[in-house]
Image (cartoon, rainbow, N blue to C red; front, side):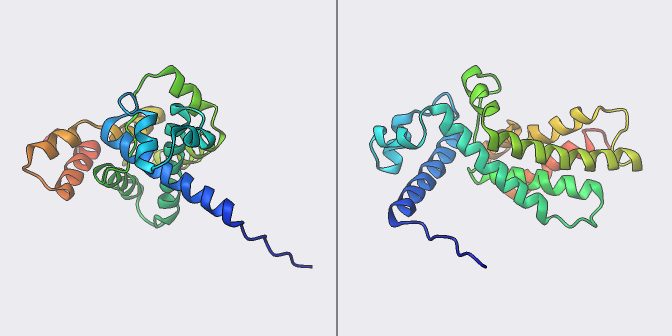
Amino acid sequence: MSTVAARPSFKEQMLAAREEAIIQNVNRLLAEKGFDAMTVDEVAAAVGIAKASLYKHFPSKEDLAAAAMVRVMRRAQQFLSEIDPQLPVQDKLKALVRWTLQVRLAGQMPSLPSQNSSLRAALTSNRDYIDAMTRISEQLGVWIDAGQREGTIDARLPREAVLYTLYARACDPVVEFLRSGGQHDDEEIVELVVGTCFNGLSAR
């Protein structure tokens, strides 16, 4: 006997739409200002709701940031699932770095502090965030191992060093330096950062 999922009520749809608006604005503010400078008042004002209403969805600023990070992680998972499995390892990793930089340049990548105990606690206690991060790291680990076996990635490098080098492109300050200089468009910036990430600075 087949069952049909119940359609969300109007109230549930409105709550979901409000939560979506909250996360979108948090993502934008985190990308523009960073976690430390963003305030809950700014988020509430951007969404057009009272701060008390905002707290009904997310009880703290840290929870807001965690929700934004979960959203980006899920987008990354979706992107990884769409990469052609027949591509060479380096091309797969370059595709991910390009995507990360494009999201960053579009103002959709949350800017979080490297050290913040309350935020770190919120992220490490968020099951959705940990699950997404684990799945992404596992997938990249498989590709890194394959690249080291075939010799396209330096086998002397610990897997974690390669993995974190890729992750670091999401917050690489060179992106802002190149954009503020005004000499390169976004596409050129992406290729410059991808090139230095995978080829280094040595002349070939």
